[in-house]
Length: 121
Image (cartoon, rainbow, N blue to C red):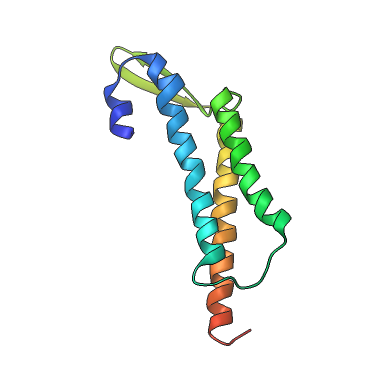
């Protein structure tokens, strides 16, 4: 997607296709890592069903906000065949908090499993 982004000079494709797809796939990556840490290699304990649902609804809401254009993340301009992207700080910080929070929660879950598996509980 990045090579497609750097080769396309039509601003329409950047705003309505490329940028949205980049952030949608960027939203799915920490969700996949978190789900991996829940189930690999076993469940440490049973968590409430509301927790699972909330961990799935947050990225779904984020993807919906990205698709509708509420969270734009960046504005793209092409000046003289040069792509200029400006980050929209608030929108990107919402995405960054989500990203690092899910990665951190997944890391803590895996760390607990290592600690529990070593018999140090």
